[in-house]
Length: 365
Image (cartoon, rainbow, N blue to C red; front, side, top):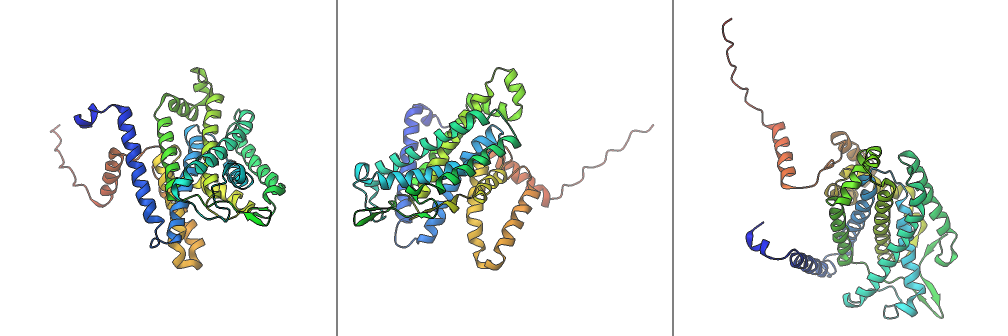
Protein backbone atom coordinates (compact mmCIF):
# COMPACT_ATOMS: atom_id res chain seq x y z
CA UNK A 1 0.00 0.00 0.00
CA UNK A 2 1.47 3.43 -0.92
CA UNK A 3 2.61 5.64 1.97
CA UNK A 4 0.14 8.40 0.98
CA UNK A 5 -2.78 5.98 1.46
CA UNK A 6 -1.42 4.67 4.79
CA UNK A 7 -1.65 8.19 6.23
CA UNK A 8 -5.45 8.18 5.74
CA UNK A 9 -7.24 6.65 8.76
CA UNK A 10 -8.92 3.26 8.05
CA UNK A 11 -12.39 4.64 8.79
CA UNK A 12 -11.93 7.44 6.24
CA UNK A 13 -10.64 4.93 3.66
CA UNK A 14 -13.76 2.84 4.17
CA UNK A 15 -16.01 5.88 3.72
CA UNK A 16 -14.17 6.79 0.51
CA UNK A 17 -14.56 3.20 -0.76
CA UNK A 18 -18.31 3.24 0.04
CA UNK A 19 -18.72 6.58 -1.74
CA UNK A 20 -16.81 5.40 -4.84
CA UNK A 21 -18.73 2.09 -5.04
CA UNK A 22 -22.04 3.91 -4.59
CA UNK A 23 -21.17 6.46 -7.29
CA UNK A 24 -20.16 3.73 -9.73
CA UNK A 25 -23.33 1.71 -9.08
CA UNK A 26 -25.48 4.82 -9.45
CA UNK A 27 -23.82 5.70 -12.76
CA UNK A 28 -24.15 2.17 -14.13
CA UNK A 29 -27.78 2.05 -12.98
CA UNK A 30 -28.45 5.14 -15.09
CA UNK A 31 -27.13 3.31 -18.14
CA UNK A 32 -29.00 0.08 -17.38
CA UNK A 33 -32.29 1.90 -16.78
CA UNK A 34 -31.84 3.91 -19.96
CA UNK A 35 -33.90 3.31 -23.10
CA UNK A 36 -31.06 1.79 -25.14
CA UNK A 37 -29.91 -0.96 -22.78
CA UNK A 38 -32.93 -3.24 -23.08
CA UNK A 39 -35.10 -5.00 -20.52
CA UNK A 40 -33.79 -8.45 -21.43
CA UNK A 41 -30.17 -7.57 -20.67
CA UNK A 42 -31.26 -5.73 -17.54
CA UNK A 43 -33.09 -8.84 -16.29
CA UNK A 44 -29.94 -10.95 -16.79
CA UNK A 45 -27.93 -8.50 -14.67
CA UNK A 46 -30.65 -8.44 -12.00
CA UNK A 47 -30.83 -12.23 -11.72
CA UNK A 48 -27.03 -12.48 -11.73
CA UNK A 49 -26.97 -10.21 -8.69
CA UNK A 50 -29.81 -12.05 -6.90
CA UNK A 51 -28.10 -15.39 -7.54
CA UNK A 52 -24.81 -14.04 -6.20
CA UNK A 53 -26.56 -13.06 -2.96
CA UNK A 54 -28.23 -16.48 -2.73
CA UNK A 55 -25.05 -18.43 -3.47
CA UNK A 56 -22.79 -16.44 -1.14
CA UNK A 57 -25.42 -16.70 1.62
CA UNK A 58 -25.60 -20.49 1.23
CA UNK A 59 -21.80 -20.63 1.11
CA UNK A 60 -21.67 -19.18 4.64
CA UNK A 61 -23.41 -22.34 5.88
CA UNK A 62 -22.25 -25.03 3.44
CA UNK A 63 -18.79 -23.63 2.76
CA UNK A 64 -17.67 -21.89 5.96
CA UNK A 65 -19.10 -24.27 8.57
CA UNK A 66 -19.25 -27.41 6.44
CA UNK A 67 -22.96 -28.06 6.99
CA UNK A 68 -25.27 -29.37 4.28
CA UNK A 69 -28.44 -27.31 4.01
CA UNK A 70 -31.06 -27.84 1.31
CA UNK A 71 -33.71 -25.61 2.86
CA UNK A 72 -32.59 -22.12 1.92
CA UNK A 73 -35.21 -21.91 -0.78
CA UNK A 74 -37.69 -21.74 2.13
CA UNK A 75 -36.03 -18.57 3.45
CA UNK A 76 -36.06 -17.20 -0.11
CA UNK A 77 -39.83 -17.78 -0.30
CA UNK A 78 -40.40 -16.23 3.13
CA UNK A 79 -38.52 -13.10 2.11
CA UNK A 80 -40.44 -12.81 -1.14
CA UNK A 81 -43.94 -13.29 0.29
CA UNK A 82 -43.32 -11.13 3.38
CA UNK A 83 -42.21 -8.31 1.07
CA UNK A 84 -45.16 -8.67 -1.30
CA UNK A 85 -47.67 -8.82 1.56
CA UNK A 86 -46.09 -5.93 3.49
CA UNK A 87 -45.87 -3.70 0.40
CA UNK A 88 -49.53 -4.26 -0.56
CA UNK A 89 -51.41 -4.69 2.73
CA UNK A 90 -49.30 -2.00 4.40
CA UNK A 91 -49.45 0.42 1.47
CA UNK A 92 -51.90 2.93 2.95
CA UNK A 93 -50.20 3.02 6.33
CA UNK A 94 -46.50 2.75 5.49
CA UNK A 95 -45.94 3.23 1.74
CA UNK A 96 -48.65 5.65 0.63
CA UNK A 97 -46.09 7.51 -1.50
CA UNK A 98 -45.55 4.50 -3.75
CA UNK A 99 -47.66 3.99 -6.91
CA UNK A 100 -50.35 1.30 -6.71
CA UNK A 101 -50.12 0.27 -10.36
CA UNK A 102 -46.82 -1.61 -9.93
CA UNK A 103 -44.75 1.06 -11.65
CA UNK A 104 -41.33 2.23 -10.49
CA UNK A 105 -40.97 5.55 -8.60
CA UNK A 106 -37.84 7.71 -8.70
CA UNK A 107 -34.65 6.55 -6.97
CA UNK A 108 -35.11 9.11 -4.19
CA UNK A 109 -38.56 7.73 -3.35
CA UNK A 110 -37.25 4.15 -3.39
CA UNK A 111 -34.62 4.47 -0.65
CA UNK A 112 -36.78 4.13 2.48
CA UNK A 113 -39.26 1.51 1.10
CA UNK A 114 -36.44 -0.69 -0.24
CA UNK A 115 -34.57 -0.52 3.08
CA UNK A 116 -37.71 -1.23 5.15
CA UNK A 117 -38.99 -4.06 2.95
CA UNK A 118 -35.66 -5.87 2.54
CA UNK A 119 -34.88 -5.53 6.25
CA UNK A 120 -38.32 -6.88 7.21
CA UNK A 121 -37.90 -9.80 4.80
CA UNK A 122 -34.41 -10.56 6.08
CA UNK A 123 -35.53 -10.49 9.73
CA UNK A 124 -38.52 -12.74 8.99
CA UNK A 125 -36.23 -15.25 7.27
CA UNK A 126 -33.71 -15.00 10.14
CA UNK A 127 -36.42 -15.75 12.70
CA UNK A 128 -37.42 -18.81 10.66
CA UNK A 129 -33.74 -19.75 10.48
CA UNK A 130 -33.49 -19.54 14.27
CA UNK A 131 -36.57 -21.75 14.69
CA UNK A 132 -35.12 -24.35 12.31
CA UNK A 133 -31.47 -23.97 13.28
CA UNK A 134 -31.63 -24.35 17.07
CA UNK A 135 -32.98 -27.93 17.09
CA UNK A 136 -31.53 -29.15 13.78
CA UNK A 137 -27.95 -27.85 13.78
CA UNK A 138 -26.97 -30.29 16.50
CA UNK A 139 -27.11 -32.79 13.65
CA UNK A 140 -24.77 -32.91 10.69
CA UNK A 141 -24.37 -34.28 7.19
CA UNK A 142 -27.26 -36.12 5.58
CA UNK A 143 -29.51 -35.76 8.64
CA UNK A 144 -29.25 -31.97 8.54
CA UNK A 145 -29.90 -31.98 4.78
CA UNK A 146 -33.10 -34.01 5.27
CA UNK A 147 -34.37 -31.72 8.05
CA UNK A 148 -33.71 -28.52 6.09
CA UNK A 149 -35.27 -30.03 2.98
CA UNK A 150 -38.35 -30.91 5.01
CA UNK A 151 -38.47 -27.34 6.32
CA UNK A 152 -38.47 -25.98 2.75
CA UNK A 153 -41.35 -28.27 1.82
CA UNK A 154 -43.30 -27.23 4.92
CA UNK A 155 -42.87 -23.56 4.00
CA UNK A 156 -44.22 -24.26 0.50
CA UNK A 157 -47.27 -26.06 1.92
CA UNK A 158 -47.97 -23.24 4.41
CA UNK A 159 -47.70 -20.56 1.71
CA UNK A 160 -49.92 -22.59 -0.61
CA UNK A 161 -52.67 -22.55 2.03
CA UNK A 162 -52.49 -18.83 2.88
CA UNK A 163 -55.37 -17.22 1.00
CA UNK A 164 -54.18 -13.70 1.84
CA UNK A 165 -51.27 -14.09 -0.58
CA UNK A 166 -53.06 -16.41 -3.04
CA UNK A 167 -50.46 -19.08 -2.36
CA UNK A 168 -52.36 -21.73 -4.31
CA UNK A 169 -52.18 -19.71 -7.54
CA UNK A 170 -50.16 -16.50 -7.85
CA UNK A 171 -50.07 -13.29 -5.85
CA UNK A 172 -50.71 -10.29 -8.11
CA UNK A 173 -51.81 -7.71 -5.54
CA UNK A 174 -54.86 -7.00 -3.40
CA UNK A 175 -58.24 -5.45 -4.12
CA UNK A 176 -58.72 -2.07 -2.45
CA UNK A 177 -62.15 -0.61 -3.14
CA UNK A 178 -62.46 -0.15 -6.86
CA UNK A 179 -58.73 -0.42 -7.46
CA UNK A 180 -56.02 -3.06 -7.11
CA UNK A 181 -52.79 -2.41 -5.20
CA UNK A 182 -49.94 -4.16 -6.97
CA UNK A 183 -46.50 -4.92 -5.59
CA UNK A 184 -44.30 -1.90 -6.44
CA UNK A 185 -41.45 -2.34 -8.89
CA UNK A 186 -38.52 -1.20 -6.74
CA UNK A 187 -35.76 -3.63 -7.69
CA UNK A 188 -33.19 -2.26 -10.11
CA UNK A 189 -29.48 -2.64 -10.79
CA UNK A 190 -28.54 -0.22 -8.02
CA UNK A 191 -30.31 -1.96 -5.12
CA UNK A 192 -29.42 -5.47 -6.25
CA UNK A 193 -25.72 -4.70 -6.45
CA UNK A 194 -25.78 -2.73 -3.21
CA UNK A 195 -27.00 -6.00 -1.66
CA UNK A 196 -24.23 -7.87 -3.52
CA UNK A 197 -21.60 -5.44 -2.18
CA UNK A 198 -22.94 -5.74 1.38
CA UNK A 199 -23.00 -9.55 1.44
CA UNK A 200 -19.54 -9.79 -0.14
CA UNK A 201 -18.20 -7.40 2.50
CA UNK A 202 -19.89 -9.36 5.30
CA UNK A 203 -18.65 -12.70 3.90
CA UNK A 204 -15.05 -11.49 3.56
CA UNK A 205 -15.15 -9.84 7.00
CA UNK A 206 -16.41 -13.10 8.52
CA UNK A 207 -14.00 -15.31 6.59
CA UNK A 208 -10.90 -13.43 7.71
CA UNK A 209 -11.90 -12.74 11.32
CA UNK A 210 -11.59 -14.73 14.54
CA UNK A 211 -15.22 -15.81 14.11
CA UNK A 212 -14.34 -16.98 10.61
CA UNK A 213 -11.54 -19.10 12.00
CA UNK A 214 -14.07 -20.68 14.36
CA UNK A 215 -16.36 -21.39 11.39
CA UNK A 216 -13.49 -23.05 9.51
CA UNK A 217 -12.52 -25.06 12.59
CA UNK A 218 -16.08 -26.41 12.78
CA UNK A 219 -15.89 -27.30 9.09
CA UNK A 220 -12.53 -29.05 9.25
CA UNK A 221 -13.05 -31.08 12.43
CA UNK A 222 -16.05 -30.46 14.67
CA UNK A 223 -14.85 -32.76 17.45
CA UNK A 224 -11.44 -31.09 17.56
CA UNK A 225 -13.10 -27.66 17.58
CA UNK A 226 -15.24 -28.66 20.57
CA UNK A 227 -12.18 -29.98 22.40
CA UNK A 228 -10.52 -26.56 21.91
CA UNK A 229 -13.47 -24.84 23.61
CA UNK A 230 -15.38 -23.67 20.54
CA UNK A 231 -19.15 -23.78 20.99
CA UNK A 232 -19.84 -25.46 17.65
CA UNK A 233 -23.63 -25.30 17.88
CA UNK A 234 -23.49 -21.57 18.60
CA UNK A 235 -21.29 -20.83 15.60
CA UNK A 236 -23.41 -23.00 13.32
CA UNK A 237 -26.55 -21.15 14.42
CA UNK A 238 -24.85 -17.77 13.86
CA UNK A 239 -23.83 -18.80 10.34
CA UNK A 240 -27.35 -20.10 9.71
CA UNK A 241 -28.94 -16.83 10.87
CA UNK A 242 -26.66 -14.64 8.74
CA UNK A 243 -27.25 -16.88 5.74
CA UNK A 244 -31.03 -16.93 6.25
CA UNK A 245 -31.13 -13.13 6.62
CA UNK A 246 -29.41 -12.47 3.29
CA UNK A 247 -31.45 -15.19 1.58
CA UNK A 248 -34.58 -13.36 2.76
CA UNK A 249 -33.15 -10.10 1.36
CA UNK A 250 -32.65 -11.84 -2.00
CA UNK A 251 -36.26 -13.02 -1.88
CA UNK A 252 -37.39 -9.47 -1.17
CA UNK A 253 -35.50 -8.12 -4.21
CA UNK A 254 -37.02 -10.91 -6.31
CA UNK A 255 -40.56 -10.01 -5.18
CA UNK A 256 -39.98 -6.31 -5.92
CA UNK A 257 -38.85 -7.10 -9.45
CA UNK A 258 -41.56 -9.41 -10.80
CA UNK A 259 -45.23 -8.35 -11.07
CA UNK A 260 -46.50 -11.58 -9.48
CA UNK A 261 -45.33 -14.39 -7.22
CA UNK A 262 -46.04 -18.09 -7.63
CA UNK A 263 -45.24 -20.96 -5.29
CA UNK A 264 -43.67 -22.81 -8.22
CA UNK A 265 -40.87 -20.23 -8.33
CA UNK A 266 -39.53 -21.65 -5.05
CA UNK A 267 -39.33 -25.33 -5.95
CA UNK A 268 -36.75 -27.92 -4.90
CA UNK A 269 -35.08 -27.59 -8.31
CA UNK A 270 -34.33 -23.94 -7.56
CA UNK A 271 -32.69 -25.01 -4.31
CA UNK A 272 -30.47 -27.44 -6.23
CA UNK A 273 -29.51 -24.65 -8.65
CA UNK A 274 -28.15 -22.56 -5.77
CA UNK A 275 -26.33 -25.57 -4.30
CA UNK A 276 -24.68 -26.28 -7.67
CA UNK A 277 -23.38 -22.69 -7.75
CA UNK A 278 -21.74 -23.17 -4.36
CA UNK A 279 -20.20 -26.56 -5.20
CA UNK A 280 -19.05 -25.47 -8.64
CA UNK A 281 -17.45 -22.28 -7.33
CA UNK A 282 -15.69 -24.10 -4.51
CA UNK A 283 -17.03 -24.70 -1.00
CA UNK A 284 -15.79 -21.85 1.16
CA UNK A 285 -14.52 -19.70 -1.72
CA UNK A 286 -16.39 -16.38 -1.91
CA UNK A 287 -14.91 -15.30 -5.23
CA UNK A 288 -15.41 -18.78 -6.70
CA UNK A 289 -19.07 -18.91 -5.69
CA UNK A 290 -19.61 -15.41 -7.10
CA UNK A 291 -18.08 -16.40 -10.43
CA UNK A 292 -20.10 -19.64 -10.54
CA UNK A 293 -23.35 -17.72 -9.88
CA UNK A 294 -22.62 -15.41 -12.81
CA UNK A 295 -21.59 -18.32 -15.03
CA UNK A 296 -24.63 -20.49 -14.31
CA UNK A 297 -27.02 -17.54 -14.70
CA UNK A 298 -25.68 -16.35 -18.05
CA UNK A 299 -24.77 -19.71 -19.61
CA UNK A 300 -28.39 -20.79 -20.36
CA UNK A 301 -28.97 -17.41 -22.02
CA UNK A 302 -25.93 -17.81 -24.28
CA UNK A 303 -27.21 -21.25 -25.27
CA UNK A 304 -30.60 -19.94 -26.45
CA UNK A 305 -29.24 -19.80 -30.01
CA UNK A 306 -29.17 -23.62 -29.92
CA UNK A 307 -32.44 -23.90 -28.06
CA UNK A 308 -33.18 -27.50 -29.05
CA UNK A 309 -29.85 -28.65 -27.58
CA UNK A 310 -29.70 -26.23 -24.65
CA UNK A 311 -30.91 -28.67 -22.00
CA UNK A 312 -28.29 -31.19 -23.18
CA UNK A 313 -25.30 -28.86 -23.55
CA UNK A 314 -25.84 -27.14 -20.19
CA UNK A 315 -25.59 -30.28 -17.99
CA UNK A 316 -22.74 -31.65 -20.14
CA UNK A 317 -20.75 -28.47 -19.47
CA UNK A 318 -21.46 -28.83 -15.75
CA UNK A 319 -20.28 -32.45 -15.80
CA UNK A 320 -17.14 -31.45 -17.70
CA UNK A 321 -16.36 -28.70 -15.19
CA UNK A 322 -16.85 -31.02 -12.23
CA UNK A 323 -14.67 -33.71 -13.81
CA UNK A 324 -11.83 -31.29 -14.54
CA UNK A 325 -12.23 -29.27 -11.30
CA UNK A 326 -13.84 -31.56 -8.70
CA UNK A 327 -12.81 -29.15 -5.92
CA UNK A 328 -14.65 -26.30 -7.68
CA UNK A 329 -13.37 -23.44 -9.80
CA UNK A 330 -11.36 -21.92 -6.95
CA UNK A 331 -11.31 -24.80 -4.48
CA UNK A 332 -11.07 -23.16 -1.06
CA UNK A 333 -8.91 -20.29 -2.32
CA UNK A 334 -9.84 -16.70 -3.11
CA UNK A 335 -9.00 -14.76 -6.22
CA UNK A 336 -5.70 -12.97 -5.68
CA UNK A 337 -2.54 -12.08 -7.58
CA UNK A 338 -0.81 -15.18 -6.19
CA UNK A 339 -3.70 -17.43 -7.23
CA UNK A 340 -3.82 -15.96 -10.75
CA UNK A 341 -0.05 -16.39 -11.18
CA UNK A 342 -0.31 -19.99 -10.01
CA UNK A 343 -3.09 -20.75 -12.49
CA UNK A 344 -1.15 -19.09 -15.31
CA UNK A 345 1.93 -21.19 -14.55
CA UNK A 346 -0.21 -24.36 -14.43
CA UNK A 347 -1.83 -23.60 -17.82
CA UNK A 348 1.52 -22.58 -19.32
CA UNK A 349 3.06 -25.82 -18.09
CA UNK A 350 0.55 -27.82 -20.13
CA UNK A 351 1.55 -26.21 -23.43
CA UNK A 352 5.22 -25.37 -22.82
CA UNK A 353 7.41 -28.42 -22.69
CA UNK A 354 10.25 -28.20 -20.23
CA UNK A 355 13.74 -28.75 -21.54
CA UNK A 356 15.28 -31.88 -20.06
CA UNK A 357 18.05 -31.11 -17.60
CA UNK A 358 21.50 -32.22 -18.78
CA UNK A 359 22.46 -35.58 -17.42
CA UNK A 360 25.31 -35.64 -14.96
CA UNK A 361 27.78 -38.46 -15.55
CA UNK A 362 28.18 -40.85 -12.67
CA UNK A 363 31.60 -40.99 -11.03
CA UNK A 364 33.64 -44.03 -11.92
CA UNK A 365 33.23 -46.87 -9.51
